[in-house]
Image (cartoon, rainbow, N blue to C red; front, side, top):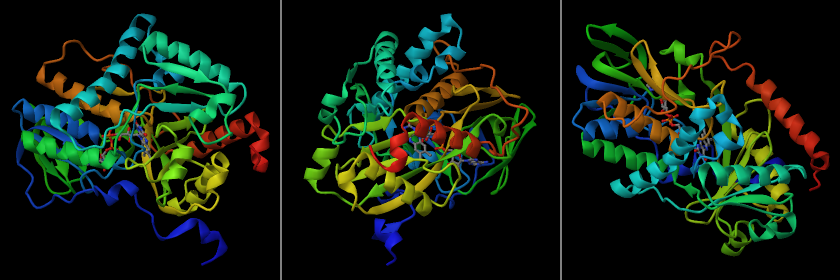
Length: 442
Ligand SMILES: Cc1cc2nc3c(=O)[nH]c(=O)nc-3n(C[C@H](O)[C@H](O)[C@H](O)COP(=O)(O)OP(=O)(O)OC[C@H]3O[C@@H](n4cnc5c(N)ncnc54)[C@H](O)[C@@H]3O)c2cc1C
């Protein structure tokens, strides 16, 4: 084996680690129905959560998925279950009017409560862990920002957020790379593909029909409903929900102009000795840092491997090529893992929006819920449920994410040409904030 391949384990595969336990599923034997009450495009958390609620309420819910079931981000993600930090920390909540922000915080934190309750109520085998999250300060000045953020989070979302200085950070992470950090204990984790698989089971038990390899190619008004054209023939539907997030394609041009797909890359290491795992992740928390080009990592649910996600190059590459950069980043955080080998590397698309806020709503009568900005395990599940309640006329109040102007940009028609530019800018900013790391020193 060439020297450069030394980072890869002999059984290395370019496939999500998660798919070892819960691969996407072929479901193309049953013919598509001629008619349904609600056609749902996409079999991620959003589509499945909507299907579950609709079917449970007695409607015919039909999920139409282009690939195998669970093909999208929902079986590829980091599985970190947020309690609503992102909209606070990124400042995205300022896109809302001051009198709306309270509901923004309530619903972002509410999505966390919702997913936990759903997993409990439906008995979903999703390896849910209430583990907390550590945010490392990448540059010295970032620690003050984390202190401010902890205050904001406590005030707005009432989560337990505390900071710890560099001198104490080894309590949280077996690394000296960071300038201290913030810990949010109200934070969870799932096995993302098992969660998707379990949601498929719950939706089916409730009566929903799930069809793979049924790419939707167009949605046309017909009578008092819609004619949904698919690769496996048409379906007539009273209502349609588009839940395609980072995989939104030409079938829905209005939405394709509003979500920017950005590839995120993850690797898994070979199983590590228990003592190493104890050292690098003493509380088995979800981990990330304050770099603009996000770095996030976690233990596998069984606590034996490190999973690490990042975009280490502005340009999209095959997962194996990107894995080399991620391996270097692992070693930057954990020099003690220099000889660790990677068993899996994969990629998936997140959906960024121009206002950094998720959206649900209707366009020409067709429902949509998407744009989770890389933070959709809880939020996509929640928005799917909210859309189902809306279709059923059972919402207590409209969601704050519903019906807001969904911004597009004149320069963007659906091809994300600007992603490498933004990514290169982020890399430059991260390097400028900490020049010594370019030379490999912490
Ligand atoms: C690598 C990675 C890491 C992530 N890590 C985290 C994390 O740790 N925590 C977190 O909260 N979020 C994370 N996310 C984001 C999270 O995974 C997503 O926000 C969430 O899974 C979106 O769910 P969804 O149901 O909206 O879309 P998806 O799960 O992406 O499903 C959309 C589906 O629509 C299908 N589709 C598209 N077009 C059509 C069509 N025309 N016809 C039929 N089907 C179609 C696709 O094939 C796809 O299966 C991550 C994402 C990625 C890619």
